[in-house]
Length: 308
Image 1 (cartoon, rainbow, N blue to C red):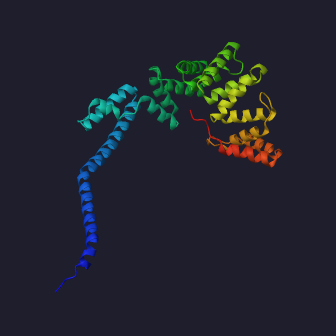
Image 2: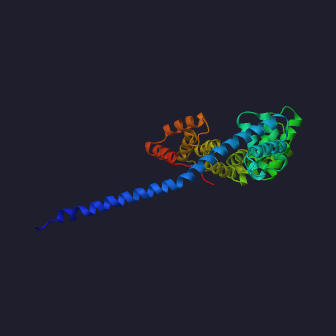
């Protein structure tokens, strides 16, 4: 009797595929089992790191609250970590502690001005330009007399001399206060120039404002406004739009004016309302023909701030 094996032959490829799938599943399971200890180690490490960070911040805050300076409080906190986890070396224990400036920034963020000022002083004394700038800003905001103002000016000047454009801008604002002597005003202009040279948008805008009133420097003011506007400074966008609308310092261009008013009004950087820009945009758009109005608004929609 002859046996027909053709039916069995048709099933052989399917059986091979099933066996291959089973082999792949077994290989994957073996891989997962082999990696399980490493995954558990990472989970344990993450939990331990979290516990270390919690204890580090608690001990550091406790030391500062007791009147210790940051350096002493940090040593105390690092010692506490090493007692709890003896395997930690001192450098590793220290790495879990926030820096003095980072801690000051946290205090400032939650409104603890006195705590932030105390911590910024330590970093500022070690020539940390950011700490000097922030310390100067906080002292200037809370100044109650000539001594406070002088201290604020001193820290801002140190940061400004170190090349911090935000400090250069704030120092210029302090120096150029109403009733300031001419020498102080001249120094303020020099600091604004320094900030503008570093492509700081607010510095460019403030320098432009001081140059705009003089016909001899109006063209320079336009260039500064344009640079600041392209960097996302909304008051500069409003000022540039006004110049385009009036034709002062530039060729009169209602379409460009409407576009810049629209950019400032739409608040693409989400920094707050500027109702004057919206009012001027709507008033100018109403005077444009439909084609020019559509062109201006399309340009505004496609605008994006310059990336440094």
